[in-house]
Length: 111
Image (cartoon, rainbow, N blue to C red; front, side, top):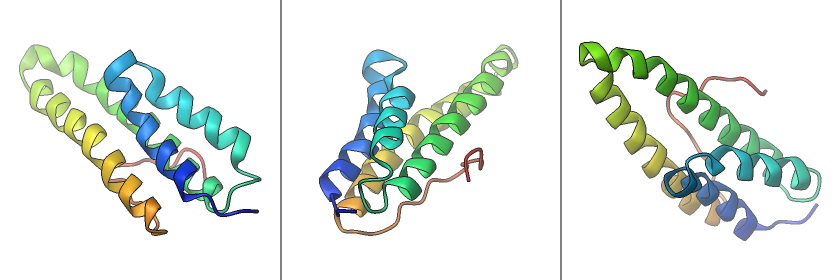
């Protein structure tokens, strides 16, 4: 296995595609993780964290959508939006320095 921090950074930043395309933030990191987890050091662990975070944000968003009608969901969606934008950037910086990423509110779907 080789160390490729640039690909790890790219994998974290690819989550931001959700803000551009609406759906690429889960698909692109999933494809990178699935194809490179055997070749890149730390890709398996970090890829799992990214996919778990994206799936968690999707589930939380689905929960917040009906809550918009009683006005509780609006702040929830804003918080989720901020978390989905800020944490990929923070963790991309951590990955570039060789540190382990941490994603808040992430459910453990893939262990």
